[in-house]
Image (tube, rainbow, N blue to C red; front, side, top):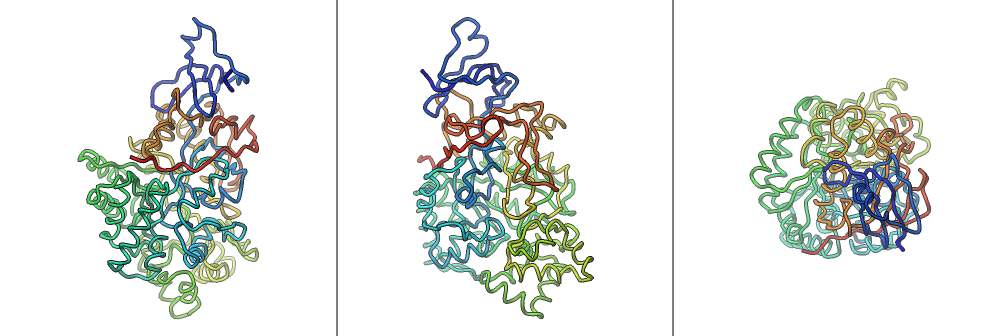
Length: 536
């Protein structure tokens, strides 16, 4: 007898088709049969060792978070309710060009310092891996949800070239090509870049094109955080389209937003650009989060020249008064490339997390608010935070536009991604709320998307991008990565004031046919594993 029958579920299967009532039988980690209501009326209903009454609940494929920063959280926090409670059954990590494989001892230490704001310093992690394959093997020991990995181009450049702003030599480029090939062979699904973060931002298009050719040869995709989301946003999108066309590589645009005042109401221009490229045969997808503020690190706003050479060089420049004044001038008056070519508006920069306890009073306030409380300039406050917390502060950047968010999420190649940074005492609520916020706010309350359409955005579309032949749909033979939610009550619990509250209306989540959420509570099941590239 099979393990589980989910009885009388309203199945939204991920294809975009209308919902239907059915009994769904799960055994051995897969969906073994689906008996629709009409068929069940004329025959004996399926039985199993356990029966789950799903009356009033929607059964859908588990959600795929196409942009996650859980690289260390998956290892640090076996519970990982931040994602499991949202119905996420697969995360894509290694984002924005910086992560922890492939590395050597030197690069690992540099990367840990550079992205401590994303993932914490990692003092509680045994970094017993160096290669992509070894990191994936570590995930296979058991994690809360499944995870796929993107080779981080910035980390690859740090390993082969260093943190200097210069072109790679022929030998260094060949070294990077080999590192990317090895990562793909070991199971990565593609490559990411962070082209406003050092050292990845120092790569010219020709270098990126060569690496994308390697990715494409293995059936992977390129996922860039491109060179500007502000003053140069449209040109930056065009650059990525042209680059991947030259490399014949599929393109997935990370957190594809149109932010800052210069882009208010300009989402239709982006969508027209995408439609033209798609009509010409380009293979493009994108992800977004359903919120207006962005989230990054405070150090990311610095001009690229100030970040050259890595974390210790940055701290040295900040400590020097004359150099710090040059940095301030670029950020506040010229428009730093780290701030997407837009002069920083300190009233939009909210400190969301620090690692130094003595700085806790800054969290939850904008830099401008803290400056006024102390009778200081905003740059004095920002500089102090960067030096005292050694570049670790994270920020919310309140620069988005609701009309752009809604327009982009409607597009036919859109997928969902949280871009959730789990660090800090007041992280962005998207880390805990992205997927129920889509279902509750944008489907039920606003009607921006139909339920069936939204579920397709969050399931089958990302599974197709990841080239996963047995995930993303409720189909017989597919993996039983499933979520059951109440469409009348599903909602994000997280808010800007209380960002770690778990969602409501998602009582059951299964990974590999095992309950990781049951009756709205996290179980102790660690059914997640690495999801590796499917060979061509």
